[in-house]
Image (cartoon, rainbow, N blue to C red; front, side, top):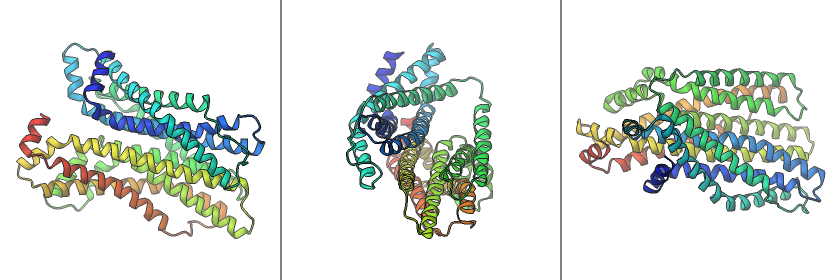
Length: 436
């Protein structure tokens, strides 16, 4: 089966580009920040610089690990779902579920390994740039030299390989089941995220406004709630679309498809909700913190500068990975619907009606993801603002939120419409026959 997996990678490299890109960027981020651990462990590094470098690697490394797994998992889930016919053919030819698992896991591990090897060079450049950023802001001594050592290398390979193998195993396990899974794992993860997230944001009220860790429980609570809401969003979407006042052929088709394919849309809604929730919570909390420090008249400490740098870097990572997951999932799912588009056109639909249908679907998905993400963010922002400033809501206005919505809408609508437009260039008869 491993030989078959290698032939599959060689014959159809385009199918694995999305997984390769996710693994490459994930390994780059993981190795970039874990190289700070190697740098902190070098000889001659002072205690303050060592503490800042170690904290940066630990905090962002944990975020990076989570996002790498989500990115690779969402990409592989879409990939495996689209190979259902191939998997069924292999089973009819005598292949056992265990053999199919070994084949797909082997493909994913090889792609992840290639992505990690390609990421070594960019990670070294990124680590040097990150160290220079800390030096320029006065958080790390200018005498500290950059080191890219075994911690960065081992963490990059280990995390990416585990993410690729684990995500592929779960995706193909779900695809090869004869009996429809009950979704107990998803329910457990959703309830666990809700309980832990609610507990974390509630813990914020037990802290004082001067505690250095005040932002941590509120931020982590928002992240956990974003995960929970993202997992619940596909199920709630099925009922919400019936309340939308959509008219005409395009609106009718969009509603029907959103209801029937609500579970498949989790690959889009989860990263979209994560992006909206995490970015909104982090940026608004940091803005509230900056205003509170400015109002006190006390200059920012090294710890405050370090926290601000980490928050901005984390938001950057969120934006990049969420956009990658969105674009990968939307591109793969829209391209896979070429046969569906052809059938709609043969039934009398025009290309314009199909594009409007895709636009309506993307708009509904964007609104759903943003609404649930903002709800998760507010659950952390409000406790943090109450404790830090005695206010209830941030005074920064809607500017930050509008920017986040613009990025989400651009990624969702842009990818869907551009991909659908390319798919519609193929004639309806060719699209149906090629996909059959």
